[in-house]
Image (spheres, rainbow, N blue to C red):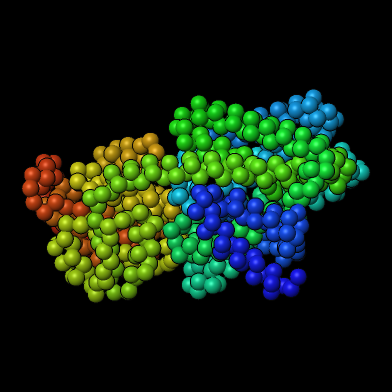
Length: 622
């Protein structure tokens, strides 16, 4: 077939299938696979499995794994690492044991073949993760745990595959094992250490959207290549690449939007179409053995993965919809299954009927996974949107910058921090900012950019004493927490010990966990210590306040001077919490107002004067 005609048909399928699927309420994943079957050699024989479709389809599978790694909340990922390990072991070993039993005693394969099929059941691919991402629930705890467990399940499956291959290949010398270990080390160092450092340096120097996108795609494909050279699966390399670049690709950033657009609109549909093209319907009817094997495989996979999901629900206290989304994500399979079965078939361990049955299993499991994940993700999204409305329905924000026009960046920051009711302005100087703060009761953010927001590695947050008494303290804390989650940035709070107690309690809230460290800052007079501890790739966040509020300090008026003298090389964000302009709430804010701080201001100025004069006196004495 003419190449242009093939390209036209493929693009037409990618355009038309989602429209039909929305009309009949079927997930698009199922529609693309069915379209591949219909257009493939089994039915109309219009499209063949050309090298171009196979290559782009492989890129789609890599993209799905990359997306799952890049969109997880790193703070939650670290917090739930032991839970991910536990569920990873459950979701691998339960299918492994059940798969060995069914393969040995129902299908009557030998122990080696049964072990390999058990490993195939234990692995899974995050085929339906784009559905989770589309509904915006990728930061849910159940999703994070399942994504982390995927890495363990794939790794354990590859280990079993390597063991079986070792028994069926000629004995190799110690040199080959050493070379293999070196390649694995090079792969891990490159993906987890070198790639993120190079990407951060590149993003800080170049702001070209096309160059940024191509660097991300180069690292995605390069990670898969290095994993393949190291004897691992490319999907594992793509997943680790997503994790390593997670901090540099905030979910709501313009760069991530470009990556998601290209992946979801081109790569993923082509992969699903390529899966459909592999399915030969006539092979199922030519032998009832293939159908019987497929039924055993499907039942084994669904039963074992559902048992693991129920265990996770009981141990981690998931809701019904969270258990469903865990099951939906963890029983779909594609690349891992095809790799294991294909290699086993080439080595003569498994017959051709198993290969055909595995392809049918992929079709059925992708279908069931799509429906279950779609339903669960929709319900979770509705629940989370209701919570967001309860938390933010009265929050209004004014975002501004001084001098430099940063309105596009501030709009992106507003999206990262989930600020719904925002107004973006541009200020000529700090005097204009002061007038804005004085004449509005909204929460105000004054942002200064020294480096791209997605290259920030740590948020250094200075919190004044009595900030916890402010009406909008929880909202400002939520701003820091959401930015930290989007950027994958660590948080260091500088605050009075009394205020630290409130901050630590906020960090431990169920479902709102924030991994943070704390440093003591007895008063705003010690704000200069930040200039001695802040390092490259840090962003300074100053929680200020208006006059006549509990946390107000006269030294707040010197923030512009302090920023220009000590923090010119660092991005900064000054946050003014919302203030009620009248009514009884003002009296509530003033119930524990700290004593006047004018004396402290005078002492600080005298101390600075003495420190400047002392070197001169020492030189004169000499």
